[in-house]
Image (tube, rainbow, N blue to C red):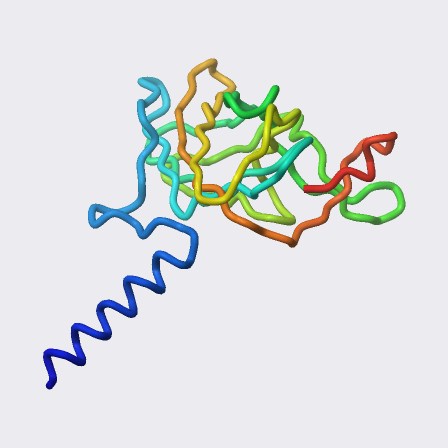
Length: 178
């Protein structure tokens, strides 16, 4: 009877993990970007995900770890699902409202440290989507660094209704949110 209970518990856990919409971490630890920068080291992505969207723009999140001995400065990137990928941050505008804008100096990941990309904070913004980004699929983003090197990262797509930030500078696109 005890073996049946253990088996039922394992089966329930497996169903719960598959229903969460994110892949469990591999036994060896967090997923690693494909490729490295000889001058910078290795970039690792943990708990990465991208927000599902049908048009315009979306964002990618997760924890980026710099295992190298030099700082990494993420300046943007590219993806086959979007016209452009920008490094974004949240800032207060003149009215004191939090708005997102491109990180003009990039996103710094100090050597041996982590940077968390999250809704309402720093993130990778995919602008000009070429089609729907649907839950259950993966997207690949080639992250670009200030030194001209790059790393390829894979983000599973999932539904998310939060983080309805405004875009800065204020113009006709300021009502767009991700």
